[in-house]
Length: 356
Image (cartoon, rainbow, N blue to C red; front, side, top):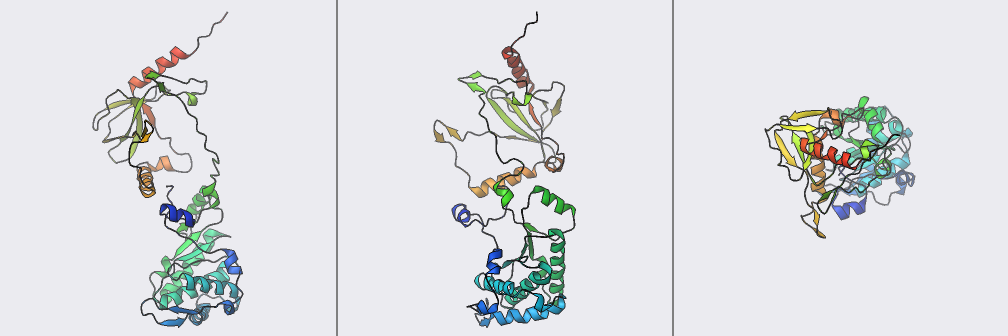
């Protein structure tokens, strides 16, 4: 729902139909010593079915790429090379390698590229690489340049477009920082800070009563943010002519709904002088009854429908509202009728002090 394209959680993929994506671990790379550890060497051509010694083919390309990428073949980790081959033999159509177990530039990229070219010769296409440590921006640029060099050498237009995934405790600040730099990253693998939100690890939710048996209620406080808007309400989203959401308008449930192309007075719930006239090009009701009398009232959307709804809703917000630094607050207004009702009820319930 938050905008991710896939998950490495196999159970989540099975239960909810989320596309499965992922790589191997550092421990997988470290578990090999050399290609002598490989019990399987043969891979069938995807098109013809011809069986080929895949290990020999990878060794051939490793030697060729050594000069092209200006990396000594002897510098490349033999355990990493063997692990990449083993992984490609098991997943030839989804080969995405973790290239920073030893050295991204002096080992990982060459080993990956050799295996990727061998897969290509047999009709398969590698996915890309993941970088999990070090200077992510710099290393991704090096990876992109090497992929571009290989693409030119072997006339492979798709090689420079290989996915370069960055991971390593990625959070919002890291992504913003990377976007301000030059980098070759086109995907992020986020784990730790997805499971636990760093900025708000706990979600504070409080039940507030606004009406009971047709009787409006109000919670008043010296802290204005804790004052509730009383009564049963309807909420509408008003859109401007460019398609962006102007504001959300709350009104009493008995009030007539705002109409497109008709001017409506929108007031700040608490600040009397803050008000405006809005003439929406489109009006969208936001509230639906999902649960009533102990029963679900509407067909529940599936996860993909919810995800699409979230993405479409975000696209209706202006860029200044979504920016990371000092975002413009999104406006939530009330009608003049609801404003008057709310503040009259507030005064009725607020104690009047006495001075002697």
